[in-house]
Length: 155
Ligand code: ZN
Image 1 (cartoon, helix red, strand yellow):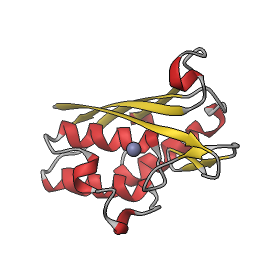
Image 2: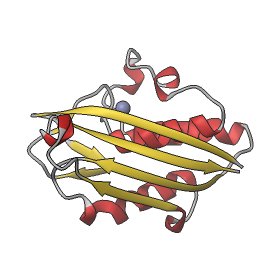
Image 3: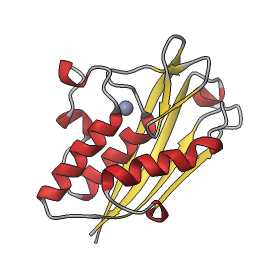
């Protein structure tokens, strides 16, 4: 078995959609980035790539490449999955924490897990998505951004 860790941060700005775990969440701000800036899926991709001993998401999906402009990060997840399948690896389980002050994302977690399970060809019972706030502290507490951690086991 192989373990991987992923971490990502994106800025919250006006005029962008908030997309987390492939789900568009109604909010007055969204995450800025080259792709859809899905911070949760980016952390997940990095944990999967890391567990396989590969490079990070920015190496495979450069923010200078027009191919990935405004793309759904579910596509990046599918591409990451292809890379680990080349090494004959499969996902054992995934544990993700998303840290943001608002909005509440608990109503969307089941849909996120379904999105992830479809791409990685695993059951939703192999995935955990949890959310927490920063208790008003730091850049997350000031609603300037959002971060996510992911741990993934490959076998
Ligand atoms: Zn990112």
